[in-house]
Length: 388
Image (tube, rainbow, N blue to C red):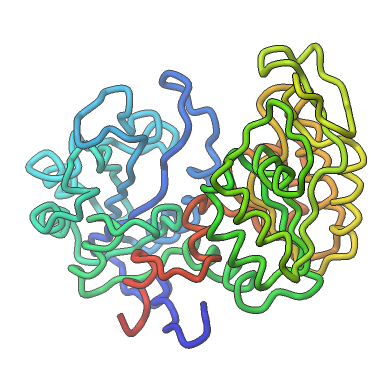
C-alpha cells in the first residue's frame, strides 16, 4: 500500500460458512473460437475460490469477458470458463435466472454468472444494476485486480453497497507486490518498458523516471525517443507529437537506455528478410532489438536490486522478432533481484522461455498495474480499504 493508505480488508477476516459470497474475479481469458488460449487468469483465481468453498461458502462468481458493449453476444459467453472451472453457468448475471441459480447453491457450491458486460449498467456503474447484483449475496470479495482501475458496478459500486467486503488472495498479492515497486524498491531499480505507443505509457514512464535508476525503452516506443535524439527511425512507428516530451525525458536525471542495434525488415509481413543493423535504413522497419541492445539491458538487470518489465521489446508474436523479449525474460529470471513482469506479451515471453517460476511476481494487472505504479488511486482497491 502507498504511505498513509488504509490496509485492505482481507478475505481471511470474513465469516463465510453458509453465506452467499459474491466474488468478482478477472476471468477475461483470450479465446480462439470457443477454446481458451491461455488459462493463467483462471488458475490465478483458484486460491480464493477454493478457500471459500472449503469453508462452506455459497460462491457467486462473476467476471466480464471481452467488450460486448452492453449486448448479449454468444461468442463472448463465459461458458468455456465455466467448463474449465467445472462450474454451472447461470443464464444471466442479474434477474430471475441468476437468482434461481444462486438459490440452488448448497454450502461449498459455486456458480458462475454470465458475462457482466452483457448489461450496459456494468460499465456505467448504474445504481439499479448494482442493486440487482447486491440481491445475490451477503458478502463481497474482489479478486480482480486487473479491473480495479475501473469504477464499474461489480468492482466499485457493489463493494460500497455490500456492508461486508474484502480483498481476495490475488488482489492482496498484486497490491503487496506493486506497492513494493512503487514505494520501497531496492536500488538499483531497473525498469524495462516496451510496447507500441509512448502515448499509452507516458504517465507511467514519467512516474518511473522519478523513482528508477534506469529506464530501458524498447518496442516501437523506442523510435519516438530515437527521433528525439536525432537518430533515424526509418519506417518504424513514431509519434511526432511526443518528440519534445521524449526529449525532455532524455534530458532528465534518470538514465534512459535506447536500442543500440535493431532487427529490421522491409515490412511487417516479410520476416524472412530480417537482418540486424546498427542504423535503421530509411526503407526498413525496426521490429526487435539486436544482440548489443540485449546485452546492454541484461547488463543492467544483472546488477539490479529491483526489476519491473512491462511490454514486448519487439513484434513478439512473429518470429524472429521475439528473440529480444525472450532473451530479456531469461535475463530477468537469472537475476537475483526482486522482479515483477506484467503485460500480456511480456508474460508470454516469460512463458515461452520457461522461466516463470524464477520471476518474483507475474502480474495479471495490465492497465491497472500501470495506473497503480503511476500513484493513482484505483476505485476497486479504494473500496476495499479498511476505512473506506
